[in-house]
Image (cartoon, rainbow, N blue to C red):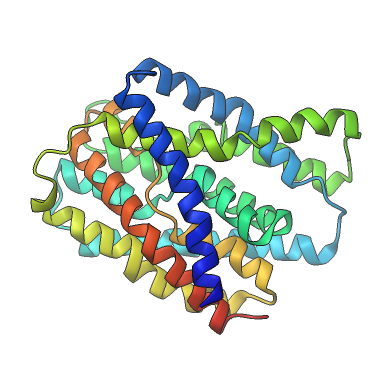
Length: 310
């Protein structure tokens, strides 16, 4: 049970930042504009620095092969998630659109990367960053589509899917890695300093988003329970044997399995508001799935440790 207790301990640390973000909102130390500004700062400055830092490693054919395998694993998990969300969630309405987003898209950047970093270090983050790139492509294709498909004037854009603040930094970082370009320490010191802000700021944003919305009749929402069961129980039960099938070492398995089982992405609130969907359901899903994951993530990581490669 050591891996369970260690994962739980690291999650408690991350949830501490969530609590600070929620407290800051309740004390009116920041408002909606503040959350939006910090989110923009993290997306445009902190995350790119984190991507660059994670790819500053010696080039090896094995790491490149494992990186491609991580991308394939991520794509398969998203395909499975999309199909099951469509089949299992209640009949289509504004709430189903939000819950589909909640089931398919996890908080891989703000929560997945910090947790992988705490558990297995920079080598695991290398593979999680590959997962993040696929996440952003899916967000700006499936995520946008599911939120606004029936709206007048809807037009799918591959440009937005591939040219956005999530995909471009990862692509740049991968090119740096493959080319063998390594920055001197005088450059990497500020890069690492800014990248380290992802853990506290990302989780504080989640806390503020949860605290910002009145949850209403929280416990009466059937769709929320189904979405939570899918995201935290059913999908991980499918993704675990898939990770075991692909994995040839422990670090790779942790680096791709953890982002696959992480709770709902914090940007669900932004997308729901932007595309005039059900923000109350979005808040319920974000809150319930995030809180319950404090128990489910340690369990799945423990099971990976028991069944996976040493």
